[in-house]
Image (cartoon, rainbow, N blue to C red; front, side):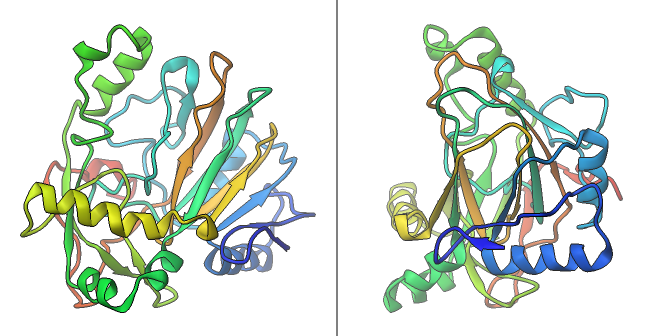
Length: 296
């Protein structure tokens, strides 16, 4: 195992994800808890092997709560730039539902010749970096997360001149059902006990604060998560696999590859409600995500 930065990311070599024993899986989980995101080069696996591997990390979810399935496997979320899929904003996966995924397993199918890297940020380190007064403020805050605000909620008509039809269709599908969930701004990691900032692009308002105050405070807290010291950047090759802990990270897929194609496939494991330092869990305010969890 080779750490990639002092705070986040490790590359694991000599590992084939389709041929692991229980000790190997335990080692990968330890690496994820310590380094937040783990990378594996040259994995000649297909969708079936990806699903089988992810299921050893936990119960799986469906591909996405709102977007249509694009493959024959209900667990596979197909992120194909040709179909208008991008994720070029800082976010933690699917925080607009009450039980965001625990782990995400992403496999690279088509990589552009130039560009298309992904960034990950350590939300535990972001919390630790807060000055004492800001940390005390964050500890007691709760935030509303929604797929119908900011990233998801766009003026599609106004974008028709700058987006391809498939991109517009993707955005419309993304908000076809609106979810909203109240999460603690500081969640306690259920395995390590570490506090971490739970924000990202789906967080749009702080409970009990005006919109203008919310925007300013979220921006301040978010800036500590995405400091360069807390970020790792991965330059993809076809066949690579990245696995990350959504309870301790945010990520950003850089859309700097123009008209080239970029295609990835993701599988996620089901999570539990986030719990704040005061013991209060997340709560759903709008939308029923029960069908998103395959065990439901």
